[in-house]
Image 1 (cartoon, rainbow, N blue to C red):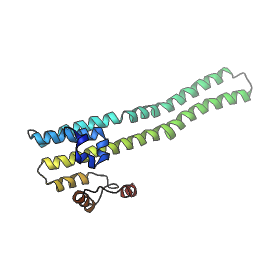
Image 2: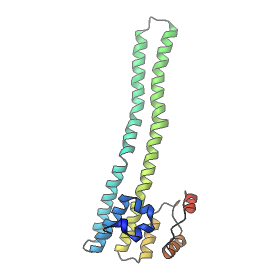
Image 3: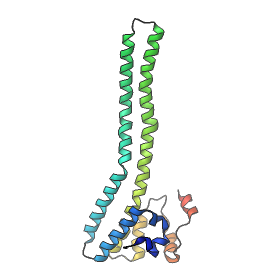
Amino acid sequence: MDRPDESEIFKAYPRVARDQELTLFICDYVRLILVGNARPYEIEALMEEEIATHRGDKLKVYFALMSMADGLPALGIVAAILGIVKAMGALDQSPALLGSLIGAALVGTFTGILVSYSVVAPLANKVKATREAQARVFIIVKQTLLAFMNGALPQIAVEHGRKAITAAYRPTIDEVENATITGAPRSESALREAA
């Protein structure tokens, strides 16, 4: 736990080892569990606080994009108002010129709404979904470690973690049993099929 980069366990699971935040999370809480002074509910509260902090940090981009998406229609309305003001200044001009000025004002509104709802908001939602999926692994680890800390056998503790996996990616109990007995993780093709 002190040097996870040298650990045979982490070397067997390079995808976990590459995620430094997850590796640190695992090592920190295994240390706390091994010390044995903390009560399970204290560890659980600490884990939940850390996960919430991690999630908040990862979702800053989402909130920034959503603020931008929320503001773009208003910016389009401001463009429309400025265009109408310009059109009102040209009331004594020809109808063709007046029509083009009013059209330009409406294009401002349309552009603000279009960019907001068809570009920025979907991008923000994609960022959120990706970051939520990345944070989900912390919850899986939390469930597994807490079950173990509460006295569950390792196989049962792993089952607690398995139940926290989203249904689309959750391996069967037989796949988990096979992986824990043989040490063979789920194949890449099986992961792609689940996705």
